[in-house]
Image: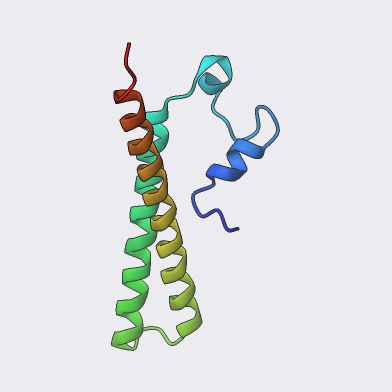
Length: 99
């Protein structure tokens, strides 16, 4: 399984490796982590679009590099979408809990 966002490797890493200090002390900043990952996915998509445009205009001739950039952007977007769906499902489940 590829991990374009680095989420799986960050969770499976050794304690303290790849984790911000506040996350070790008692909970990370989920909102900031999510925004950072969204920025990374957006940057990947912009890079793939730029590579495609360069290929079409003849500034670039490596179709393999363009395909790799496009697939990376697609995988990252799909993983971010799956994460979003899990968060929405969790929210719906918590919302339906009767107190």
